[in-house]
Every structure is written in structure tokens, then in C-alpha cells.
Image 1: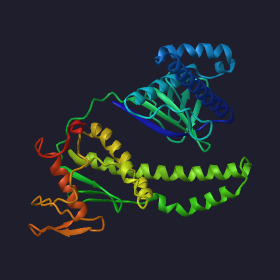
Image 2: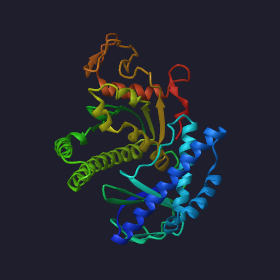
Image 3: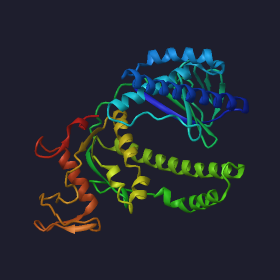
Image 4: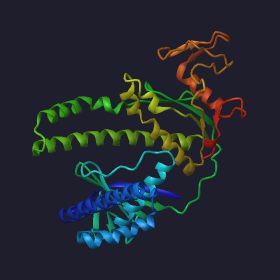
Length: 369
């Protein structure tokens, strides 16, 4: 089964120069190929495949000899990434964008790689020291080197040789995601929302004010900008770490998990809640659940977006149409059952996911892991 490890790396000054050159070359080839694709489509109304685009690399090398200084496979992978971007576009995604010089930089290679306890070997660059000790028996399929705000990382993709786990046979649970509490489970378990952005909000505001007062292009402004970027990276890492712990606990503890298909982009249109919704990481929570379910033998079901999970009574099914976001506890008018809003929603999500086809709007495509 495909897995990945991401670890911080500490390249030497000479290695940093070569890595940064590779970033630039891959970005140049990607942007050049994208420009050619746009021109080709304008003239001939067609796009070309990755193999024809790879021939463009040879033409570029004849014109720009400095492309020979970096790993050839990394340049080739940039072309493959462009083809993947076009495939996403044809499936309804956004049109491929030109890569920028500033911000997060990355490149991928898939040849002449080796893992050692505290080092990772990549073509041209050589051995790079890693933050954590790695399993030297890992045989990587590819390695992605990335850099943001002067911090370097290596993401190692490999196959662990295991098949998808069989169902673990544990109990079933429904999950209601929210802002006050990140996740409420149908059995009463609550995963609290740590609100990572709020903890660092004052520091970020201070850096943003300082950045706005400094002259564009100055060294001091660049230093402040790097500090601001690192503050955002820290928030993102804390959020992802918390979500990893929560999703691992859920997929290991339950054999069947039902969640709701949330329209996150639509929810963000409420400007009063947009920052809090973004801070929760609902999409990342669901993404981690779906791939970890294969590791631990957990089945994931996703109910439809229009199911009345909050307004319906989980005991008798009566729907309270006048329920508002402010109502955290309510009493069913029909059976007089007192409900906690989140627990009631989680129980409904579980029951809706196992309802007979046609009786409830269940996303059948996502029923299996």
C-alpha cells in the first residue's frame, strides 16, 4: 500500500544552492511548457500529451545549457505534473496556473534514491541530513523536496508491501463536524476544537502591521515576511498534527464511520464564521479519514449534503423546521425527547448512512473505502 513520510531536512549551503537551482529549472520548464500548450491550443485547438511535451525538454536544453546542471528526472516530473494539472482541468477543476518564483517551491525525483538512518540521498544533491531517524529498509518510489520560508522538507513516497486491511469488526459511529467542538461522535465522544489560529492571532497581527510599515524590497521587510510565513506554517502544522491524532483514533476504534458531505466553500460565504471554518480543516479531516480507513480496515460512508441531520429527531424522526444555529439543546415536540444538537446530528448521520436506498439521500459512490 502506498504510504508517505514527510520530514525536515538540513542541506548544506552548497546543497541549498543546487536545490534552489533545481526549483528554478523545474519552474521554468513547467511554465515554458504551459505557455506552449496555450499557444498550441490557440492555433490548433488541441493539447499535447506528456511524451510530446518531454521532447520540448530537449529543445529547451539546446537553448538553455544551464538546464543540464540539475537532475533530469526532476525536470521530467515537472512535465508530468503539468499533465496531471490538465487532467484535473478536464474533469472540472481550475485551469493550470503558472508557477511563481516566490512562496513554496518543490520538485520531485524518482531515480537513484536511497534512505539511510539519518540521511536521504537524492540525485545530484547527494546525502541530506534529516531531522528524524528513518527506516533504511524503505525503498522509495519518489522523493519530493520542498522549501517554504527557508525551511526544507523531504516527502518520501514508498510501498509498504501490505494490502488493504480487512474490516476490523468494531462498532459503528456517526460524526458531526462543527466549530464549537471539532467533532461530536454518536456515542457521546467529543473531540474539542483547539482553535489554532486564535492562539497565534496576536503574533500574526503584530507581524502584519510591521510588514505593512516597511519598504517593499528591503531586507528587513523580507525578514519580517519570512517570520510571518513561518508563523502560518506553525499553525498549519499544529492543525494537521491534531487532525492526524483524531482521525487515527477514530479509524482504529471504529469499524464503520459515517460523516456528512459538507459544502465548505458555501459555508465560508458567511463572513462571520469563515475564519473559524477554515481553521477547523474539515476537508483535511475527511481526506485523512478516507485514506486511513484502508490502513485500519474501517468503512467510511458519506451522507448527502441536504440531509436534515440537525433538525430531525434521532428517536422519532420528527423535523424541527425552526431550529437555528443558536439552539444548542432542544426538545422534540412530538416525543418530548431532549437533545444535544451535536450528538443528535451525529446519531442521525449514522442512521441516514445505513437507510435503505431511496429513502434517504445517501452518497452511494462513497459508501466503500
